[in-house]
Image (cartoon, rainbow, N blue to C red; front, side, top):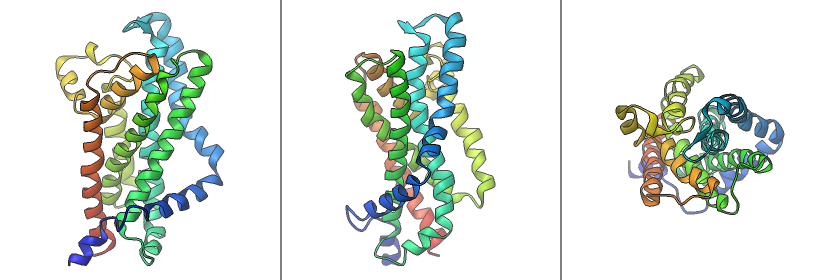
Length: 260
């Protein structure tokens, strides 16, 4: 019994790298299409809402609406990039690839940690893609925007860890869309990505304070706009909680599913 529980935890600090490398080598074959897919939706929102509503809205919190929106879309791209990598790609790998890995020296914990690290890498790449476009358009303040990069990676870890719980519970692909529709999409509109949280009703402001995307935006937006960020420890701590607790929960659920 003890060995089974130990198998759900990483065996050491480095084995996860082989899982990350395996996913990277597979991704290289479709890298261009993958990058375009990860950044297309947030960029469509950025240009559509930014230039459209921007004319009507004007300035928001002392900056142009499109600059405000762009910073939010960077966080959103990290959220969606890591989430989709985990609930769709990782769900497919769980069916056969993970079973093969478990016959090696890798533990289930090593595999889970490697999947989280890879999803965080995808989140970082997606966020950087939008940042580069925003830089060309003049909506990013440098070099302060570099402080957003660790926040992007942490955002990827948090959302990948949450999504892995869904992956562990979902009986089939058909159930994954519920998480996307009922959790990810509402969070986009209640976390301050599209409009300020301060403009929402009081109840929604309180709810936003518990959402991981809201904490991510509070770290990324000030960095991209060249402003000092407040309560950094609170936001980083919240994202760490959203990373660590679901990691152990998903590991336990996956152990029951793959190692009955």
